[in-house]
Length: 337
Length: 289
Image (cartoon, rainbow over all chains, first blue to last red; front, side, top):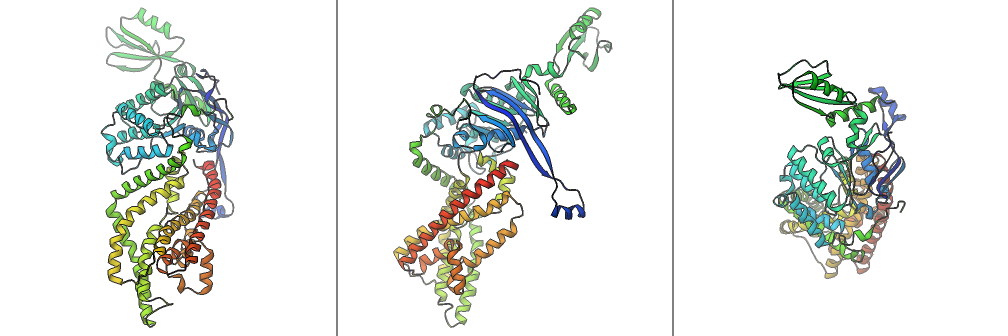
């Protein structure tokens, strides 16, 4: 594991995890009749370590991206932190509570949004479900109405909350769903793929709402998403998990420097395209613009040579796209013993 | 608290109803859940009606069979005339409607679809949701039941001789029956935490319930040993007892004793639910989440 680069924003972490581990015993059976009969008397299982000795701290008010490929252990970790799963070993504290005890005082301070899960009444307008949420969380009616109306305004839901949920589009449903998940104004938000399946505009809307909520209430957010735009827009810090182990915990901006020792140089020549393979790896040539990949250390020197040797109309030096960096991080995790 | 950042109730005072309003909070919660259940079921009023009409087939078959036997036996069977049998099975339709609870087969889907996880994330023991939602549904279906009962009355001419105390005890007993059966089926349904093949266990219990509750046949028609067995099992208190409380001309002692038995089974059920839930949820949290 790489040691944390970013310290928590508060001396008292909102989330503290140490040596957390979760293993599942998965039944294993060979195909065929003989194996089926054998399994009647001897059931074989295989131990799968979904989360393997992880540790991190998240300060109050931080927004942290929790990244990893499918099956890396992200959702398992979120489930342990929200009290849905008992850890096999290790410790987790969320706002001072042990999540697995699922105390009412703890549940009132957290929320977990899963992109494909629906807690609203399908056949009723969202407003009816919000009333139910008010009663379940025992929210003070006046405060509840203020919060509800604020959120409805922020997400521009005034027309939608009067329609039965089943009549809403996926994106509209997600918006009313998120409002429902935040009506009790939780201090901790576990967001598991909150923008999955949504179009770009709707993703942006959800992102800005989460950012606004974080700003307004100082809530701590732990977010998983396969859309890097979500992570880039919301998170300064990311925790990368792969095969149940933490590969990186630190500033998103430093991730490239740590895992991808390259830069991309974009060049547009005055005389049009030319063969620039002598300067670096040509990634693309498009509309007269050549994109090169060079080592991070050599980037200034290559740029200087290009400017000196050629008639350059435009030149940019950039970090590689975050998606590429993340891919390299995951690849490095796969190579690890 | 194990961590420095303990719960800070002062942060919540503006948002949550204080503990002093705990009773009011429960009343509010149940009323809100009734309301949502009623709104939901009004959406499906036609489907609900067809469901109820379909449900009537079962008691009508029992009624026709037993009435035929009574006539062949010279006008009564086991001391019950066709008119009394008609009264029994018409009240049966209401009691059946009242003691419908969350199906044991629903648990598997609840776990598989992630509904249980969503419930566990809220500060409310899920049984309250089931009790309140199905109670709200019953309020809708009772209204729908009235015309069905009127038609059955016109067709089968029940012999009804009901005292005010019978009505009062019946009004309590049908809700008691609902709670006893809720606890029973919750405990059974939680078998889904261990196996997805609970069908044979459930079927065994359904058969016992069918025979020993008064659903298939009035308990007075069963042999003595079976009646004594029914007295010590919970099934009778969810079916036969509420019906007899209304139409059986039971002495006051038996009426009140029946309510006491329901209370006893509710208490046993609550304890059972709590014990099994604790183990079941530990298992769920270990493997499923």
